[in-house]
Image (cartoon, rainbow, N blue to C red; front, side):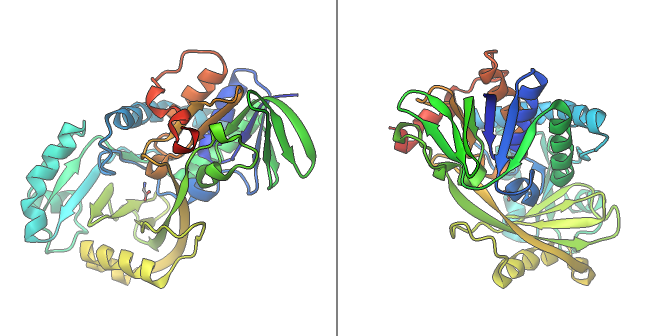
Length: 369
Ligand code: GLY
């Protein structure tokens, strides 16, 4: 019998598995795809709750706790595996290109500050001094100093390697069904048969709401919201940090790619990248920096953000003993990985979680009412 089965080998599932394996638990992670793919691979790795306009105090506090946990998390994985996830604390620049946006900078700065951001308004010269690649028609910016970014694909490789090193097993199989009666989980069923487990964690991202076998009282509502992205090959050091304008962001990578994202499209589990999606991203990106039009488009892709019914993730125990949920992180899954992993693993291990999870109780899901 397994101590713990985790369904979903994204960053959230792997993070929980890693924390539990460190505590000596026997853990197997199931996924239909290879580990650390889907949204964990597709995301931009922004650790930017203020720029994401998170205003819910409970969620903001969770995001801030995870942001604080990031340096130690990345360093632990680097020490254990040799893979550096390239955490960069360069902040975020919100750039204005027209009169209306320029007039709004002071109010935008104040709103960021109210939520805990360390934000300042920069005039045109200071904005260009920070990011010289910006178009000449830039009017000014708000700079948020306490945000960061990480290479989520490298982070995924580091976390999977750390899991394996700590004894976590990965099983690649689709069609996982939860086996539970009205009170208690018994394990899971796959194409290979029944596997008994004392604890099962649903960390299946955009697919978490559709896990077969979950009794009605423990179901959660998660819907996929697609995000299309693209990458250009730019000279190294082309931008310092995150740059946002008109809901489009630019994220530099140490390997010379500049990620540009992301659309937000509700069309079920469709991860096509459309011409319209690419056109809309490039239209804003080329306004931010016209010189981007001269660089090679090297990659396009899309991922599915797992959106909950109220914007908060579902974290913790359910009505079914032994069945827990860690899903619905929407736009902040990469940011929330360390705190989710530590808190959910602590719950399972019978320890006091490092953060209060009351606001994220999965039993608040509409289906569970
Ligand atoms: N966190 C970025 C996005 O979801 O597009």
